[in-house]
Image (cartoon, rainbow, N blue to C red; front, side):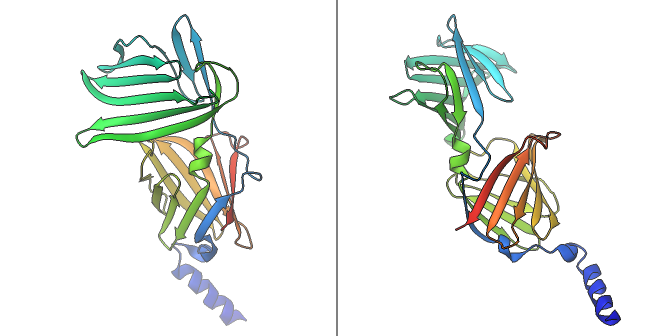
Length: 258
C-alpha cells in the first residue's frame, strides 16, 4: 500500500502543470442551452425621446443624439450624424477627421415589437458588420421610445461546441460564427468571428477536473468573471458569469449534451 501511495504521489508531481486535476474528457462535445433551466433574460435598453432629442441607456453606457442629419462632435476629432429615414428606420454615420468610419442602422419590425440594431465598420477592405442586437419590446407602443430586452445573446449562444486538450480550450458558437482558442494558463485571447465586440478578450484557468474559471475583458478592463462546471455524469455544463465584485448577481446558462 505504501509503495502504491508513493507512486501516485510521484505521478502527481510529474504532471504538476495540471496536477491530479487533469480535465475530464467529458467536456468535449456539442451542447445546447435549456432556456427553462437557465437564469438569463438579456440586457435591458431604454430609449426615450424629448423635444426631438433621443437618449439611449443600457447597463454600462448612455448617449443622446438628434436625428437632423447634421454631423455633431463626439470627441477625439470624431462626429456622428443621425438621419430618420422613416418612423421605423434610423441611420447613423460616424466619421473621424471627416472620413466615414462606421454606421449604425436601427429598424423596427412592421408590428413595432422588435428592434434590430446593426453596426458596420468601414476600412480599407470595405464594410464589415461588427455587431447586431435584436431586442424585443418591453414597454412603449410607437416609434423607438420604450424599454427593450436584448435577446440576441441567448440566440447566438444557444449552441456551443467544446474541445479541451491538455493546453487549450476551444469554444465555438455556431449561431454567432464565433470561436475562442484559450490557453489554460489564463492568458488573454481574442474572440474571433463576425460581430465579435471590438477589444473583447477571454481567458480560462482550470480549477479542477470539472470546473474552469473564466474572465472576459474589454480593452484590458475586467468585464465579467465566471465559471464552467461539468456535472458528475458529464451530461450538463452550467456556465455562470457576474460583474467583478458582484458574485451574488449571476447569469447562468444550463447546457445539455446534444
